[in-house]
Amino acid sequence: MAPPRPRIQPDPGPAERRWRRYQLPVWFPGVALFVVMVVGLVGVGRQWRRWGGPAALPWTVAAIGLVVPIALAQYLYRYAITAVPLACLAAGLAFARLDGVRWPTPARHRPAAHPAPAHESPVPEPAPALESPAQEPAG
Image (cartoon, rainbow, N blue to C red):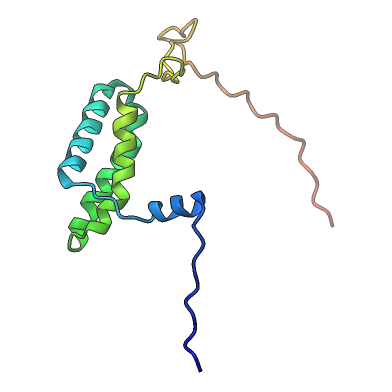
């Protein structure tokens, strides 16, 4: 028998080429991660009056995602992979202009319109209970 002839692969389409490029590894150096984390922290610090603004949550989750695995087990690069997108999101949100967004303001304590005088109780006294007529025992 003759050996099988190799099949000729057709030229992949643009979708398949894009998918193959998507699967290629990306190199994100540790110095770049440090810079992104510091930029996010500076942005969160600038918005401290709003509890860090919208960047506080992704930055906090990224920081926890880096610190907790180091504390619990040996540090491996796979733990940093989950923190990179969150840190980049926090760095972007930290300096984004969100002028059109209306932020909720905390409710302020407003005093009562007419406070009760000091000698009166602010809570009214309960009304006396009405006595019901005694029922005769059955039997």
